[in-house]
Amino acid sequence: MTGARRFFVEGRSAIGVAVEIAGSDAHKITHVLRLRAGDRIEVIDSTGSAFGAVVEESGPTVRATPVERLAETSRSAAALDIEVAQAVPKGRRMDFVIEKCTELGAAAFLPFYSERSIGRDVGAEKLSRWRRLARSAAQQSGRRAVPPVAAPVEFEALAGRFGDYSAVLFAWETAPKEPLRDRLPSALPDAGRVLIIIGPEGGFTHAEAELAESRGARLVWLGTRILRTDTAAIVLLAVIGALTS
Image (cartoon, rainbow, N blue to C red):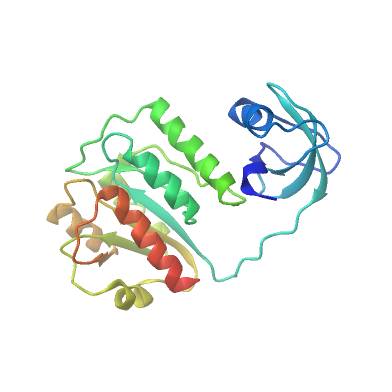
């Protein structure tokens, strides 16, 4: 079944027990896909379990009943969970980062503010939009979990969490000029949580890079071209995926 018919539902689902889908997902089912009673969709519950379900009723609220459990997607025991710490950019550039990095498999997003951050206007509405985008991108790309999007913190607070990760990669334009294909194999563990850190439009300060390195982060160079902040995370995530898949 295509990602267009895949929807997340809250709680734990079971075969024969109807679930209700509301909001934008219900609108998509009823008015975009034009599904009616008897049509099939896929629902994924809060545990990541996927079910084939039959639509019982469409409208402002869609009622569907799971009829079969779908096979788990195989995953290597040595898989890495890559989390993205992104300095909040101005405007809606974070929307692009969250959507595309979700498609590339980001396990979570940790927005933060650094010394040169321009975008510091993150309120409840913007955070809610980021979470909706992560949910939509997860559905579209066939994922069984929605990556959480945390509320922004200051860089110093983010640095205090480095010990929670097996590896921390700090992208910096003045890092030692070692190509990623040479740098990453030794920097990445075989398994565990990895945090990649992308700076703001104006880049990180030397003091921030020194703080990151003192907390155990490895500085990585993304190449001769200076990438936009909303491009860098996508590039690094894609390269990691290519080297570890």
